[in-house]
Image (tube, rainbow, N blue to C red; front, side, top):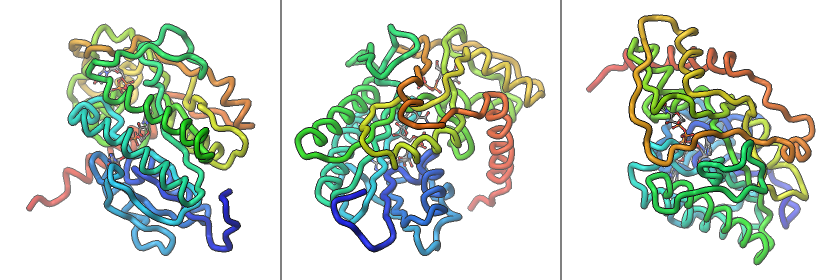
Length: 327
Ligand code: NAD
Ligand code: UDP
C-alpha cells in the first residue's frame, strides 16, 4: 500500500475521527486489526463517539487541529475533519475554509513525506445547486462563490484541487469521494441537519421545521452503507476518483418529515419556515461510476429502515442526556 514494505501492523490516521462518520471508521479499522490514530479538535465531534475505543491497545485519540501540521508514520490517511452541517460550517466560515484548504494541504504534505495513501471526504456540495440531474462525477457544478454556503462548497472544491495537484506534482496516492447526505447513529442532536432535526423534534413532541415548501429533494444514505463503500475504495488500487458515494433513492424533504412523523407518532405537526439562501433544489447521485469501481457495493438500507434505526439511537441518547447529572 505504501512506499516501504512495512513489517508492522498497518496504521491509519483518521482526521475528524471523533465525528459522526469518522467514529464509525475508527470502529471498523480497529476491528479489522489496524492501528488507528484518531485526530480531532472536537469542534463538532465528541469524545463520547469514541469513548468505547479509548484504552484499546491499537487506538490512540489525539486532540489536534489539522490547520496545524501533524506528523506520524502512517500508511493511510482518511481526511474527514471538517464541520459538515450548514449550521456548524457557517458558525465560523473562515475557520471552515482554513480547515478544508490548510488542513487538507497539511495532510497531503504528510502523505507525501511518509508515502501514505490519502482519502479525501469531499461532498455533493461541489455540485452546488445542480443544473444536471442526477449528478455524475463529470459535472463541474453550479456553485455560488460568495454565498453563505461557499466557505464549505468552495473549501471542498479547493481541497479536491489540492488532492489532484499533489497527485500530479508529487505522485501522492489519492482517493476522492463525494459524499451525499448521510445519516445514522452518532449524528449530533443539535447539528441542524434535516434528519437529526426532524427526529429530535418528533421525539420531543415539537413541530418539524420544514424550510421552504419542502419540495426540495435529497438522497439519504445510511451510515453503514457509506462506511462500507469508503473502506472498499480506500483499499482499491489504480483509481483516484472522484466517485459519488451515497444512496440514489431521492425524497422530498416533506416526504422525509412524513416518514419521521409516521414512525415516531405523537403530537408533532409540520411548521413551515423560510428557506435559507442557496439551498440546493435537488440532489441525487448517479452511481454508475461508483458501482463499476466498487464491485458488489450497493446502498442496501432503505430510508424507512435507516430512519427507524436512527430514531432508536436518538431515543436512547436523548434519555441518557436527560439523566446526566449537572454540576
Ligand atoms: P462531523 O461534524 O460529525 O465530523 C467532523 C469531525 O471533524 C468532527 O469530529 C470535528 O470535531 C472534526 N474537525 C472539524 N474541524 C477540524 C479541524 N480543523 N481539525 C481537526 N478536526 C476537525 O461531520 P460528519 O458528518 O461526520 O462529516 C465528516 C466528513 O464527511 C466532513 O469532511 C464532511 O464534509 C464530509 N461529508 C459528510 C456528509 C454527511 O452527510 N454526513 C456529506 C458530505 C460530506
Ligand atoms: N431542512 C429543513 N428543515 C430542517 C433542516 C433542514 O427543511 O430543520 C432542509 C434544508 O433546507 C435542505 C434539506 O433539508 O433543503 C437538507 O438540509 P441539511 O442541512 O440536512 O443538508 P444540506 O442542505 O447540506 O443537504
